Picture 1 (spheres, rainbow, N blue to C red):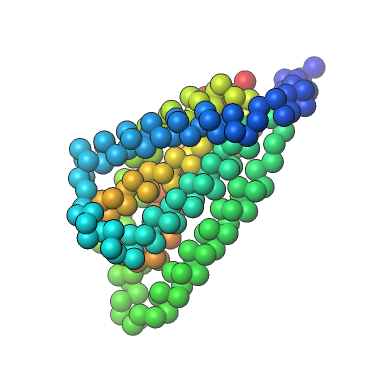
Picture 2: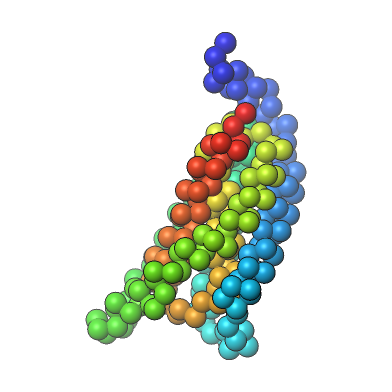
Length: 213
């Protein structure tokens, strides 16, 4: 019997053996440890902006709502892919919907400003640093989450790793928002999402190795 056939057979036998809540109970604590590590790294590396002013700013809540919604979508994907023979359709649909809403917000904002201000709205002043900072902040969470996934039964290691990277990347982007003062929805859509996407790619690459049976 080939290895892939054996894994498929085990998958069928294991289907339903781990409840969604038991999987979430492993992934969320690991991601929270990563979030605290990201926060500590942020404070030591970049510091935090004046949160008294930030919490009354609509742009702060726009970014936070978006990244938290992406984190929830990533958790749905990671939770499903951590179990054998499970479909991640629900999480992927949630991810598409969240991104589509943000795209609509960004388009509306861009159409409402003079053309001369569009480049600034798209690039801000930190476009070349934002995605990589998010990736750096996501690395601790990715390590902890993949470690938690090893105790589960993902049968598609690369996809499961990508789900983990999406989940922790969005959490890292939320943490990064405590520093980042960019206000444009378009900036958030492009560069925050870019950093999260890179985190998902790293998760896929790492998961293909770390989560392999």
